[in-house]
Length: 445
Image (cartoon, rainbow, N blue to C red; front, side, top):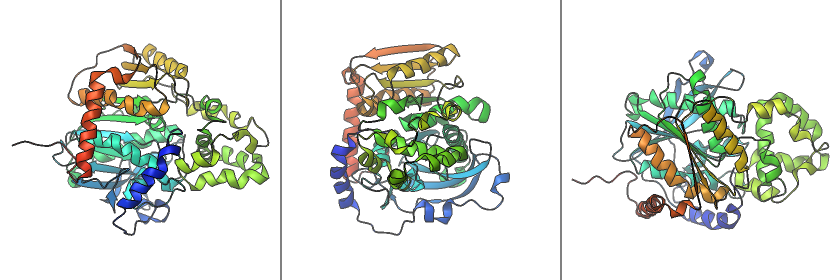
């Protein structure tokens, strides 16, 4: 769930990306790519089973340049939807040079779209030309955070956690897909070189924090075999219904249509009701969100009142059992957590995250909670990243965060010297990467 600043930067960034599109190769989108179609009988495989794999067809690219990686892989694997049915989805594994193959980060991209062709497995490649106005800027922007982990030498896994039907906000499915993506990568050593039983952490911001949070909540019951050292959740949106009043008639109104459509892809009752409730002359405009990615949706619905699209304005609030099932706070995670949030967050109220943290703490979870008094939803993406990276590095290095909970409220994360140092280091490494330096730690001697 990414807000309005993309309105001011996407044209500039899109221009840079266009200048970098020097390799015009065929790259079929997921909807036209047979790789994404599971083989017959895959339903009988265990969750996390690798169904097929391949090198990523085209180069990986962020906002400004092609990443010089040692290797990149796509893995189709078996996972489970919200109802216990077998489905298949894809994860992308990025391998830096001089990799420490005993360390793995699963990074959940905030895709926030209800179209399969917005999935990171496609969006992070050059070229990936679909998505509407603004294209795939949002996943590529988040690749900058993944690069910070790659520069540490970690392998980075990023799953298409919305599944084959782009079921945005079907968060039980998302949690399953994250956990099974980790299982699949753990089982991939014969072609990726990953170490047996690698140290593993998870990270997600905004829409990615929902998938990460559900994975953390579901891990004890769904994937008790996985040992996960920690998880970082930023820009949390614990209550998906609670976000509607904040985002409606705002620069972020465009988050709502793909959320409704994503749930309709998983829940037939939502799909059936939606077909009956849309205002006839607005139906085509609303359904366009099913064929474009986040920035295009932000632009199309900017500042609008989403309730005008429905014959009954209460439609969005009429599926309490579904929205409650896909909101956070059903189980206290056993995985240590780092949660970071700006108190000025305009997508989800800080009070809802405060309540979620209290629920986790009351349930015995280990939580380190950082609140930034001046940060918005967008600014905390960057300002909170160094703290998340430090926390995850400590987990992978074997440091115990201890039991219980701690809350740290800061005026601005920029005042933390560690934050400034990491941001400066990341900028230097990004500039070197622009010049073609291999992505990964520099080894001396």
